[in-house]
Image 1 (cartoon, rainbow, N blue to C red):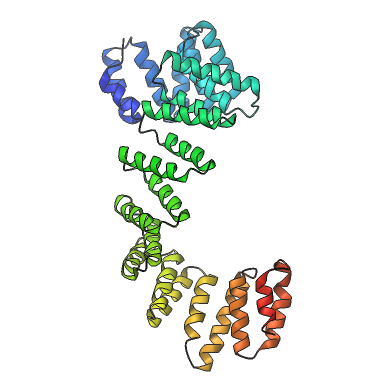
Image 2 (cartoon, one colour):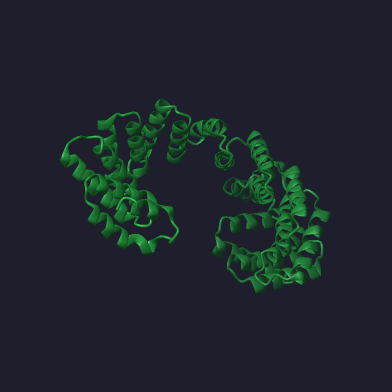
Length: 390
């Protein structure tokens, strides 16, 4: 007896709690529907209620130890418990009784694909099981996707890509296939194709924030900051997370749009006030527009959350604008603290050396250089720059 369509829909969409409720209500009316009961067991397992599922499966096996469906479910239970050898044994027993059990064929194929002891024989078994699965159920998109994983592991990218396309043809909402294809195209340098792929994925499902995250990364690689900004703006609208506003602000700075950057950073700070990066970015923004007091305040807020060389350097650079000797001395202190936090970073070494040189404290440059020189490669140009100040 086929499972009613109103139950099949939440099953396909992965809405397990909803499907369970519908299945239990249906089984009260049709208690002898074995197919519906089998789906109920799968749903319970899918919700990681292993003990409950184990009781149900044990009852099935005890009622008929030659039931291939029960053996297949027990194999799945073994998988959930991490007993893979027992799982394979139950799957094999189930196939001996009924060699066309789609779920068992798929599970054996999937286990073979991810096997630690992966060799030519294991690969052949995986392909055989998965191809048999799609032969019996051509629209089994997960089997197509596992074939993509298999071909990737075998170093056959073209076959892997085709298997991903086969998956998306049957389930255009299958996010892992888009990401998998993106990795395949990226590996061969086809970045434009990856971008178009993720844009197509967003047209199908605009709620997949991972696609926009990937587009942002790729646009940054290509230095297409205008395109990245548009994606970041959309991401703040669709997801609106702290990292989204942080990204938007940083892109706005690159595009010389300080007003948008300020709004974005302030929103990020509102969402996550304990993260040092937002206040630091505001400090950088204000310093760049010569709003010294606001910049200093932002750097201090950042340092309240974490002592970082970035914010210490920002404060030091502000104080260097002053003609007061006390400010110049404090700038050196901040540069020293920054360099101590990251002693192998050329930027912080050079900042400190220049400040010491301007103050006529050459001996301290020598002391610093002696201390940090082993941390740098001998040919590092920053060492030569520091030596030129002696």
